Image 1 (tube, rainbow, N blue to C red):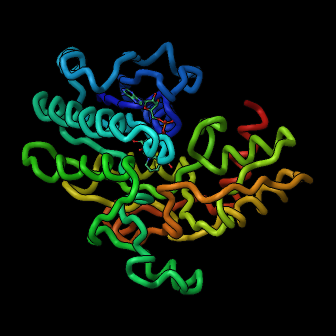
Image 2: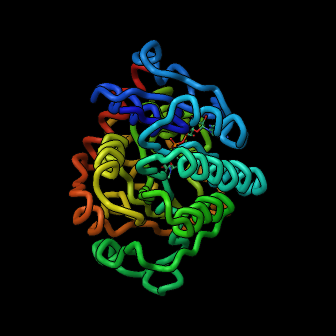
Length: 320
Ligand SMILES: NC(=O)c1ccc[n+]([C@@H]2O[C@H](COP(=O)([O-])OP(=O)(O)OC[C@H]3O[C@@H](n4cnc5c(N)ncnc54)[C@H](O)[C@@H]3O)[C@@H](O)[C@H]2O)c1
């Protein structure tokens, strides 16, 4: 079966490509290597098709679809950093929205059976806890009150807005079967520790090199972290289950940046301190997601708790 993965040289995309290749699928990757690396695909690169192309280039994208006629499309290519999007809002609209439109239109035109879109649950609901006035609850209650998929979208960054607008494109067409997976904060092997996003990889690499990580604000930002293997398994389940709907993919567990820092410090045995900087624009205070729908529709159950996921991430970063 032919599978096309956009953004397949990136962090999540390469984990997905390797898994699907090992399951016996024929893989076509479209990636312009703006933040992805061919090294991520080292073990499979001779057995897959790699098209170094920009999803903004509509004509080339249609040609690629015409040439390979993929049956399923996993669409992950995006400018994926919130802080970068604050500095370059127009670029996010171009890559994340117009680029996605090209992929959705080509998928429709060439009769793709289903498109699985990587959405952002961490930004889609915006400052949900703040506007619902429920931010001062215990951690347990914050998890219980986490937003379900039907809550109104409210992204506050250009990244979040551009990612959310793609959902309108998907909802407003009726020829293509789609699923939008709304991730929490994904972490794990192949995440770039020198990038703008991915606190766990960035902190781990710094600590392994005995350098000080930076914590923005008081370190109390809470996030719902999900290990990349769990995200890959959600994508594979979404290929078969669910029709035309958005589904949160996370752990429904919140951890603050400071808690993550302390866990990593212990696991790595880092003896240094951290550098404190002011909060960055675009960061929401609390983001935790309700995952009942993923459990019911996809039969999704995260396999990694935070400790197991952190250990696997550290092991990878030690070797790479
Ligand atoms: N990592 C997370 O925590 C997280 C959370 C929510 C949603 N997502 C979404 O998951 C997807 C993958 O994210 P990631 O963390 O693997 O990011 P990543 O930056 O590692 O991967 C993105 C990939 O897309 C490629 N790309 C970027 N612009 C492109 C373009 N114009 N044309 C072709 N290729 C292009 C990059 O080279 C890269 O390989 C993105 O859509 C992102 O918005 C990620």
